[in-house]
Image (tube, rainbow, N blue to C red; front, top):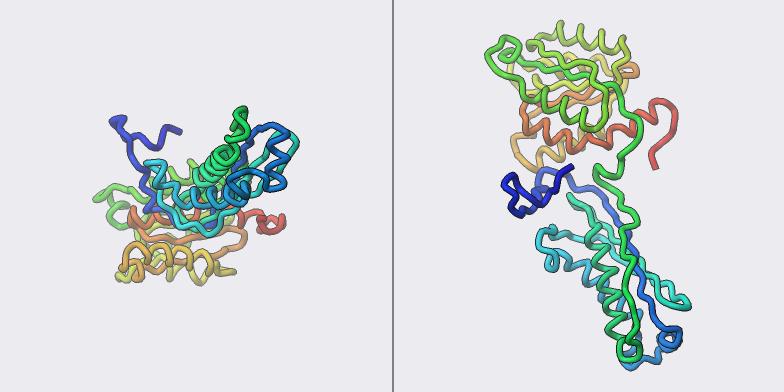
Length: 314
């Protein structure tokens, strides 16, 4: 993966996260400030001239986390849900750990790292009158959760993609949504069985689905045929085949789409199980497909652990 804060010409650039859904994300960072045992003793009994060191450092760290975007130029301004800092006072120094949470479109690792850094600097400032030997270091990101980087391993279903379009099937138009889906699921690590393009024909849609289900394709994504036109027959064809509907998937896709463009309410999305195959029907636009990839990957992959009886994801 290349550097995300550089554009194609090598100039600095803020990353556009407007196309990503907000999800629960957290990050934990830690650091250490080394000091003389005598300084630790003074700190422990509030004997330093500037007052309660750790209380002040905690407030400073939380304030720093909330203002990270004002300190680091290309960080996004985030609405933090929670931030906390804990200290472990030891014989020769203080270990600092900060945890930050948000429900935004990008991670909070920089907020956690900034919180640790400013908390350590605050301790330094409040103790420097009595200890000139202090050292700040070992600042590191311990973990982050949420977003796509949270699920870097795990089962990936065998996936096939069905493009429904009269114009693409006849050669009058070029497929773009199917190619985007294939690239997105390949990038996520899914083995791709087939990308097939057919016309908006109910019998042919049903036939392809029957074959793929019998062949053990675990995830089937269709694109196209979800509108209100007389040739939009995808959802009407697929719905009677479902043994289970996945209303949560449908709601997540609807919610994200309508939050970006009002006409998304006119699309008829569908998601459900046909036997042991998961089928998700998406609109045919590239925008809708790109949005769906943001919503589905990697969250949808947890379903296959449940299908295989491995229980819910933690």
